[in-house]
Each structure stands twice: as structure tokens, then as C-alpha cells.
Length: 431
Ligand code: ADP
Ligand code: MG
Image (cartoon, rainbow, N blue to C red; front, side, top):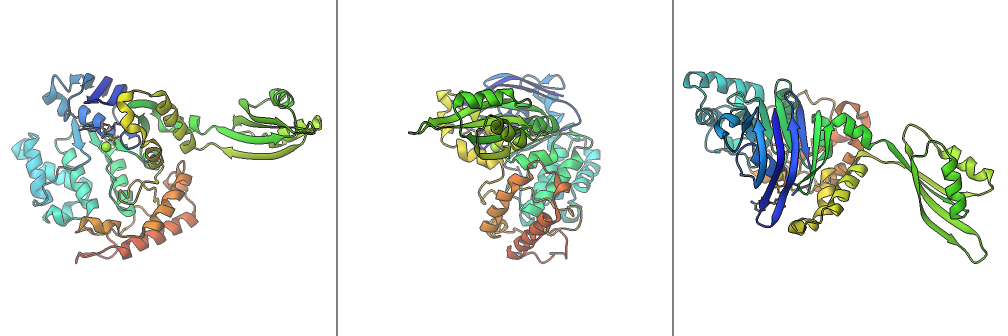
């Protein structure tokens, strides 16, 4: 169990973490979700003892990471945002090196290395140079090093950033399997990613926690509203009176009212009610009962991302610590990023869920790192836009059309990539 209490971190004038507290229970997969610059890496670096805090406390199974780092660190494996790989080593050499550094007993190292290679699926590439591996495989090596020493908790900072869609699916599967007998904390700036993998979610924005709890609860509480926009030929008082009389409406606000030269009033209102009821007819009939015409009505369900945007921007508005004003300009961009519309250069977080995630999948090779971005950016962005629709859909609930779509795109990404690896085994991930 990890207890984070009143953690604050300042970098000079920048308040990166503002008195955050949360608890990580054993055995679940946690998602630390937040826009770029929210404070995710700072949090993870502090929890893992890589960075000092300005104030606050972190206890790992009761050991303070600041006062008893050696004890505390035994329970944690960490894959930082920039994986600490020695690319001129092979995975086997590198993992031996890490195992020694972590103090794994010499006679246990061969078995320990073999086990983590097995679990992360890198046994086949154990003797290739890390620099010749695809980014997806390199990330597996990074995860393997975090697992050495059998820590109870694995902490992964944005583990899918920079991976192509197929690699993302595979790394997610790997993370889920790690979570079966360990605690996993992963950070992400992509909501669909967290909702696809995590049991619990901690949402961080501007160094503050804005939501924290089981994924299911948070998404159901956030999704629970329908918002109806109506305009009625009626006065503000008439609209208020009619809406007040309708049961089921949670709240409403008058958004606009005017009276024209001939004395006819028009009033608009925003009406909120739970998604499990439909009040369109009730509202229409209620106004026709007093002979008032509803001249427009639109209904939309607030989605997880709408509410999330609201959640983070509310807090952002309330957060006027001038020390953090350097974050301000990026707010909108960052929040968009959460929903997957990040730019191609990061190529991350997509919910390219296909039904055959377990089947053989090709992986693009990126002997040169940039080649993984060589699939058509426009296609990629179009897909990113669609991701918003998948926010609450888990991988299995995507319909066939969408799957076909993604498969096409996957196909393209593979064809378009600069595949220089001779061993590009048919239908298998390129290593
Ligand atoms: P995230 O990982 O969520 O993108 P970070 O924890 O990296 O966010 O950063 C949180 C805030 O702290 C940002 O405003 C960032 O600019 C700032 N920050 C991070 N690292 C440093 C540093 N070494 N020096 C100064 N400011 C930093
Ligand atoms: Mg980060």
C-alpha cells in the first residue's frame, strides 16, 4: 500500500504539485490521468524516490520514501517516462545488469531475468541489441527491468507514448496481465487509455487531484446527465413556472430571454435531467398546455469527456496561483490531449481496440525511431477524433464497422512504415 500525504512540489516558482493526497491499495491497476504538465511525472518521480518533495509524505508499506528509501524502494519497480535503457546492450545483458544493481542475489539472477523476459514476451529477442528493437519491444524491456526484484508495485509513466496503435494494444494487454498479481500505477494523458486498462482512476490537473475513485463509479457519476436546450415563445416567468412543475428535472437555467417590438417573448433554457429518462414529450406537452410553442429543442448526453473537461477547467479556473501561470496558455490544448486528439508526434493513447488483440499482430519496425510516425497523419488524426466516441466503450463493445476501420488503418500503418527488419516474421510483431 502506498500513502501519499499532502505532497507539494515546487520547481522554483512553479507549483507542480499542490498538496495532493491519495492512497494506492494492493492488487489494482491505477490510472493517473491528467493533461501534459499536470504533475504526473513529478508525482511518480517522488513516489519512487527519484525526486525530492518540497513537503509532504510518501509511505510505501509504512516506510517513508524520504527517510527509509532503501526499504521503501524494494516494493517498487519504476519505468520512467524516458526509459533508462543502455541501447548497446542486449536485453539479457541489460536485465542482468539491472538485477545486480537492484541487489537480486547472484544465484537467483538467471532465473529472475528469464522470468521477466518470459512475462514481457522478449525471450526471442534476448540476444539482439536493444537499439535494433522496435519501440514496442524496447518498452517491454523497460517494463521487464521494472519487474526485476519482484516488486509489489509497478509504476509506469506514460508507457504507451510514442508507440503505434498495434504496439499500444500489446503493451496494454501486457499491463493488464501484470495487474493480475501486482499493483500497477500507470500515468496517461489519454482518457480512453485509462478507462480501458484501469480499475481506479486519479485525475490530476494543475498539480491538484480533481477526481479519485473506481473507474466505474467515476464514469457513471460523470455520465449521468442529459442536457436539453430549449427555446420557447414564452416569458421567462412562464418558462420558469412550467419547468419547475415537471418532475424529473434536476435543474435548469434560463440562458436567454427577450421580447420583440410586438410584445412577443422568447426564452431559452438549459434543462438537466438524468440520462435514464426522456423528458422531450413531457416538456413539449407542458408548454402546449399553456399554449406556448417550443420553437427549438436539442438534447445531448453529457459524455465522460465533456464532464471531464468541465471538471478540469472548473478547477483550472479556481486555480489562480500565479506561480503556475506558465501553465495557463496550454490549458485547452492539454485538455484536448486527454481525449486522444494529441498530435501525431506523440502518437499515443489511441483506443485502437480490435477484437483480435490477442491474435498475431504486426508491429512496425522503427530501427530509426521516426519511422513509426510514417503512417498517414490525416488518417491518424481522423481516428483520434473518433476516439472520443469510444470513451466509455471498452475494447469488446466496439462494433464491427469500427473494427474494420481500425484494421484498415492498422494495415496502412504497417505498409507505410519503413520496415527494414529482415526478420519481419509473417503476421508476428516485428521485434
Ligand atoms: P506531466 O508528467 O503531468 O506532464 P510534470 O510532472 O512533468 O507533468 O510537470 C508538472 C509541472 O512541473 C509542469 O508545469 C512542468 O513544466 C513543471 N516541471 C516539471 N519538471 C520540471 C523541472 N525539472 N524544472 C522546472 N519545472 C518543471
Ligand atoms: Mg510526464
